[in-house]
Image (cartoon, rainbow, N blue to C red; front, side, top):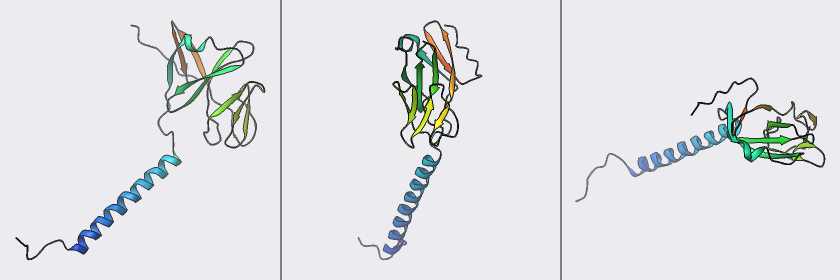
Length: 156
C-alpha cells in the first residue's frame, strides 16, 4: 500500500535530523566547556573521616594521600614528628602537588610552582599558600576538617 501524500518530506526529515544533531553537539560542547572552566564547583566536603591506623604510622618527612572530595588531600608528617593535613592542589591552576622529601618542599609540575614545608608559596606562579586543614582524633577515627569547622560524629 503506497501513501499518496506525506506530511513530512525527505528534505524536512533530513533538516530535522541535522538540526537535532547540531543541537546535541553544541549542547555537549557547552557542557564540556563549563566543566573545564569550573571543574570542582560544589564538590569539596567540610570534613572527611579516615582510619587513624592508616595515617599515623607514616615515616617522618613523608606524605600519604587521601581523597578530599574530588581532589587530592595530603597527610604530612614533618621531620620533628608533627602531623598536618593539607589540600594537595596548587593554588594557581588546581594541579596536584607532590612532596619532594629531599628538598622538604611541595612541587607543582604544571607551571613549576614551589611551596615550602609550611605550604607557603616560594617560587613560580601560585598566588597564595596551600590550604591546611584541622586534624582531630576520635577513637580509631582521624577527622580532617576545614579550618573553623566543628565536627561532631554521631555516637554509635
